[in-house]
Amino acid sequence: MSFNIALSGIAAAQKDLDTTANNIANVNTTGFKESRAEFADVYASSVFQSAKTKVGDGVRTAAVAQQFQQGALQFTNNSLDLAITGDGFFVTASEIGSRDYAYTRAGAFKLDSNNFLVNNNGDFLQGYPVDGSTGATTSVSLSTTGPIQIPTTAGAPSATRDVFLSMNLDSRAELPTNPTFSPTNRDSYNNTTSTTIYDSLGQAHILSVYFARSGNVEDNQWDVYTAFDGQVVPGAVTTLNFLSSGVPDTTSFDNIAVDVSVLNGLLNNGASFGDPGNNFTVRFQDETGTRRPTQYASNFEVGTLSQNGTTVGRLTGLDIDASGKIMATYSNGDQQYLSQVSMVRFANPQGLSQIGNTSWRASLASGEPLAGEPNTGTFGSIQSSALEQSNVNLTTELVDLISAQRNFQANSRALEVNSSLQQTILQIR
Image (cartoon, rainbow, N blue to C red; front, side, top):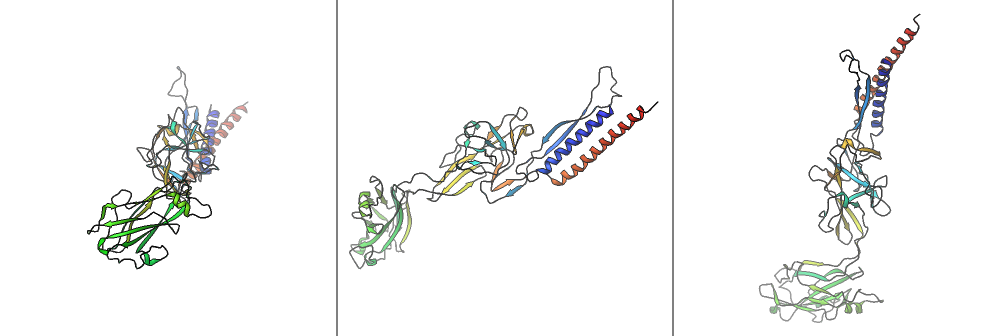
């Protein structure tokens, strides 16, 4: 009996040594969770056996339980490196469209050849669908998650439909010395400003607006001319009238409608402004209609100058906030929400089944995964440009290694003594 007890002690000590060695080996593994060997005594007796004199039958390994306490954060320069602060796991899938999910705390993600976010094993990071403009999550369910893809362009360009312009024209200004307007003659106008507009193909052009005081100074009247890529646009003129208070006379305050067919005639070498139906208007107001041109005794100053066209935008930046929402910034000024990193938690994380690569799968012991938004409720927040380090304490593991070694030696000694006793008995004659 004592022989078997000593053997069980050796086996338990070996399991403890193996567990400690595995922890030490993974001290630098991102997202690794240390394990702890847990043991229970073995005891068996019959109905007619006295429990007072019964000796135990040794020891067995009850479980090798992983400890999911938070690991330290290591900050990086890669915005795709993600760390969870608090409870929760990232969700990954081995194939696009697969519902066979794995769960991990290792957030070293990168882009594959198709611009999907993947980990080192090539598994796809899953995300919730969001509204592209507001970032509002449309569904928080594992059944609606999908792989997160980062597009490199902001989509098709859009032609300019409106140019919004508000400014102050100096009421002290005199009439131009040259009454015949010419964009190349500075004496034929008082002030000018320019903006970039886009045709339906995303090509950029320069639209210039010129202001020349006209009539008598007392009339508070200004003629407005336009030029397209340095050439005067025929017919694209208007007159702005102001009241004596300096505010616009809205009864005779016309916007400038620009005919694209006229612009096409100004372009050289067969170039085109694009779709001839994309006429646009120069509107003397801001986009909300609250700011209008003024004529005060102050220097010329542009208050609003914007337009609603865009060229093809290239990805220039990626931002991931604490709630896991991914927003892309493009070179044309567009900002678009792409997805929200999905997160799950479990009633019993220690019940998860290990599958390697610092990943787990749900089991009966762990319970079903509970999906939720990061940074809400009991779900942890996401830290971009950071990785969660292993939660192994190397000093503690080295002490445990010494303890397991002593335990192994003690059980080996017990086995040796038991062998010596049996040899003595066998030698009795």
